[in-house]
View 1 (cartoon, one colour):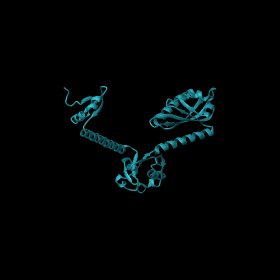
View 2: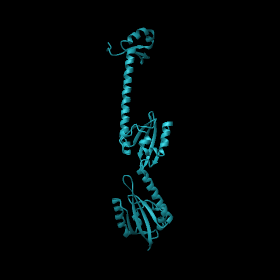
View 3: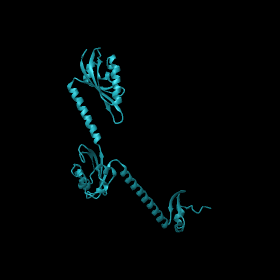
View 4: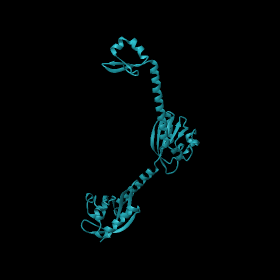
Amino acid sequence: MKAAHEPQRVSAADFIRGFANWRLQSARKPVVVTHHGKDAHVLISLDDYRRLDREVGNEIAAASDILQASLAALVESIRDGVILIDRQRRVAALNPAASDMFEKPAADLIGEDLAAALPGIGESLIFHHIIRLIDHRERFSGDVPGVFRPRQWLHVDLVPLPIGGAIVLRDVSDAMAGFAAGDMRQAMLGAIEVDGGVGHARISVRETIEAANAMLIDMLGVDAAAIRRVRFSALLAAGQRAAFVDVIESVFRSGDPARIVSQMVARDGSVVDVTLSIVEVRGAYASDGAVILVTPRGAS
């Protein structure tokens, strides 16, 4: 005998012939309709169906509540500043990172007109895009200078939402400063190339040459391919190598630039008196090597 909790099974053909009977049976427990011996459909009572529908709805609602709580916790914890504004461009909510960025408590900003509460935004180029965000649900992403303080760069993302929109702010001032410094270094190297009287080489932390300019290559009488991956100290006179190694190790250890007098040996065996100016190239997490300026002091 089957257990009481197991459903009844009936073939599709028998179900059609005895539908009235099976409909009554389904009021007591589910009836499984099989097709070619395999379960295909289940007939249950209307009350059971409504109960299942409520349970599924409750599960979906609970899952939605958990998702919303998780999203709220995520916005609260991220380091980007997030401001939610309504369709009247009033501040609806903001996360702690935004409050810290503006140096104002959230309670002083919520409900206030965005331009009045944060004049820096209202007076910046970004405000035009905020208007288009609200009026036309138009997205925007870009870097904007001087919104809240001079020389500050913010990466701004504008995202349309049912409430109105979200303004996501990330301080990228350090990255912009790095780009500017890189542009300045490139300009200085360009000036050195135009001058033509100073050589320079980029070396790795293992002291191998990664690049050298035309002036240094011509001075040594070699080609660019031959000088690559050679240890810089190998280009110096034998008596000068130990002092150079000591200095380059000090530069990598302390990060302080150094300047020494030395001698380089050309391919034809001639010795050139030079001054070496060494500056470390520091990456985000470790040293990326060094740049060496080579200034001739006259041939020996």
